[in-house]
Length: 310
Image (cartoon, rainbow, N blue to C red; front, side, top):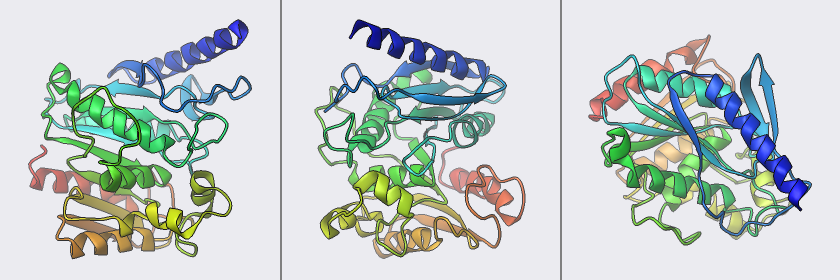
């Protein structure tokens, strides 16, 4: 058992070193939990980071959730914070393209950013894999809000951004923020003040969902009740946070109907929302390098400004 903990400590040290080397604006990486809720210890289940040129690209088999904190250096802090949920089909996390690079962009706007390395659903390390990622998301929001003054953050201007399956987690938090999934030491609310959903998985319904994400989160033969519970377009209420949505029409991996249906549910419930459907971009375009999808960051900045977050 002692050898197991030594190996785990070494892996964590390596990951922290990789993360700390990849962006000077980053101030620290911290463990999310003192005690992970409903944890199962599995000695053979160990994190598998993939790095290139000293930069952490992606990781899988996460056992120790962390928050990496990025503070603005070259722009005046605006008091807004965004927690970033990288995508990866609930089977890995795209830590650079949908994590660090996004934090860098947000910092350039004066926004404090937090990259959440969340646990991926697994029966091997959690008692209920359906809610493991949500537990991490809820705790991350509560932690940032509880400690907002530490980074000169306005506790009423804390939002989330999620990509692909990370978009599903962000929309799950937006619609399930009040679900009691664990006993929190914090009194702060887990409700985001706004959600930025970028080519998100929203639905768990067959024919619309991303099958890999559905299988990873809900298993091979989920009940209709479980599918309905995590089809977040069905869980929107008037209290769901204001939302900015981005999708490409030619996305064949996560169909644009995911964003469209969520937008319609928000509209039906009179929730402030904006949807951008770009002609080209496919899936996983990140900050947008080509095609019409490259413009989404500018549109997002304008939306944030219009709502007083800058």
